[in-house]
Amino acid sequence: MSADVVDSVIRRRAFDWLAEQVVLHGDVLPRAVLSQGFMFEDDRVPLVGPQGIFKPRILEVPLSITTVPSGPYDDGFSPDGLMQYRYRGVNPQHRDNAGLRYAMANRIPLIYFYRVVESKYLAVWPVFVVGDDIAKLTFKVEVDDAEYISQGMTSSWRDSAIADDGSDARRSYITASVRHRVHQRAFRERVLKAYREQCALCRLRHDELLDAAHIIPDTEPDGEPIVPNGLALCKLHHAAFDRQFLAVRPDYSVEVRQDILNESDGPMLLHGLKAMHNTRILLPRSVGLRPDPRLLERRYQRFLKNA
Image (cartoon, rainbow, N blue to C red; front, side, top):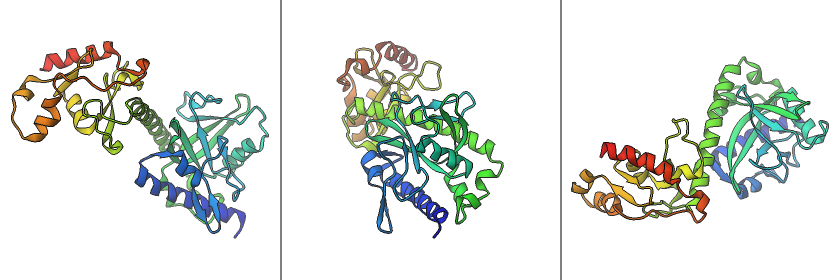
């Protein structure tokens, strides 16, 4: 097979493999899984490496790009809604930067990894490099839809019309939705880590059943996705908190609505909700990550109006 065909086959396999891992782990994947990667014939193909722009040995063009917030590079989103990805170093001709430039010129899709917490990454694919600002040492990146693009794949990415089919509006929409998903996943992982992966009310530890609940909803201007505006809650207590069956007071104690306390409806209501009344929530060990009492007070006042 030609190098172009090998490249195309491996990228398709990487995309399929990532989809399989998301089914197993959710869309926030452990670095250990990504570093291990998959086998292609007799070669192991890892998806991440020590550098942000990563090219497995078997390929000639980078396979993935990784963002580490608060790391050495100030990646983010530009005013036009596109993702920005910083060059490696300051030399535009560095082989990693040249590799991304080649991917842009030949419409080759890549994988984007965003580190939400230590050793955990949100995987987004396929993404395309669509701009190169040498003055700012920055590439611009757009996201496309994995299912849509798979319908147009041929033996070589260079022969595919999908990346050049007038899809700017579609990609802009998808990129904007990815931005929201990145922030929400980062919020969830940071909140769960602060609460040691357990519900603040009932101490349930099953990650699949845990959410990061906003104290002030993210639909409001100051409903920021930061840990002091969050609580780690199991799905039952998240729903009860959102629907004001219960509240967390500024002193970190739980108050269950009086009509719920007066109700009789089996063991789940008794043990799952009524038993939480006047208990204290589990708190993060770091004082700076604990729920902001001012935000809890605002939320509690809303609860009282509906009690």
